[in-house]
Amino acid sequence: MDATVNGGRESADRGHRGVRTPERPDRPRHRLADTRRGHHDQDRRCSTRATTPRTDPVGMPGVHPVTTHELHGTEKPVLDFDRLERHIEELRASYASASPYPHIVFEDFLDPDALGQAMAEFPPIDSPEWNAYMHTNERKLSRTDPETWGPMLQQILRELNSPRFVEFVGQLIGVDDLMPDASLEGGGLHQSTTGGYLNIHADFTVHPAHRQWQRRANLLLYFNEDWKPEYGGDLELWSRDMKQCVKKVSPVANRALIFTTDIDTFHGHPEPMTCPEGTARRSLALYYFSQEVDPRVRSTEYRARPGDGFRSVFIYGDKQLLRTYDWAKRRLGLSDEIAFKLLAVRDRFRRKGPPD
Image (cartoon, rainbow, N blue to C red; front, top):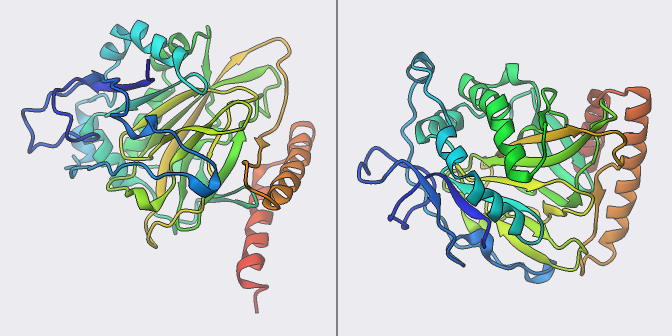
């Protein structure tokens, strides 16, 4: 069974995916399951660096955002918890059977009005609060302080980290007593623009500040309206032996992906993006943990792809530097702020040379 479901909106209308608009009152609010092979671009196979195919275009109709007062004054939820919970058995089966490792893709994940408000609030790329991950294995920005987010983005975070949703994720992946991470270590809001990328990797396995917190699942939620295939940025899911890319997930608006975190669940978007200046690949990343007696600790494991050639030397070297930093961070309690500043200085020198 393909691990692609529609997270809350059943419909016979297959012509558009993503956001329900006021101009289409005939479209039901909730689609849950459409697992026809090949219907979704994330089901297409992908290959190595030289021949990675692009996904098909996904038409995204416009969104009419509501005001913050309208949305919060009525306490309108952003997720349809009831429907997700009613279909947990079906979703769990799809998740467990997915290839190359357990995962599931939700279409129309958020209420469309909430999505519109969240996209309107998403901080611009020139905002000073962004932290820069600029090194050999990635080029992206992150923001982990929800106090700097807009009210709708904060509400989405609260609901996705709420006990009810965390219990749903635990049932989905088969892990009891799952926990959210209030510190958003490595997560939060992310965005990348022209030239941005994230090399193929498996994520760190244990929370840096909690030795017994084993990382169990990732949730990625995208906020990219009118994202075109030629921009790149598709998330690639690679086989556990790193021999081939098995699936791709295009980062279109209101699509969410949940997948198992393990030592060999390799993923990334390694090709530099070609989106226009001012256009960014925007997402929310959340991670869920369980408390274990003695989980295996390993920092982020970057891997070269078949065909990366001499570039693999730089990927490996950067990984070893990051591993040293991870060791120091866990034992000495180093702050990421220092690392962000050093990376920003190094990136400025690399691109422009030293300041006058």
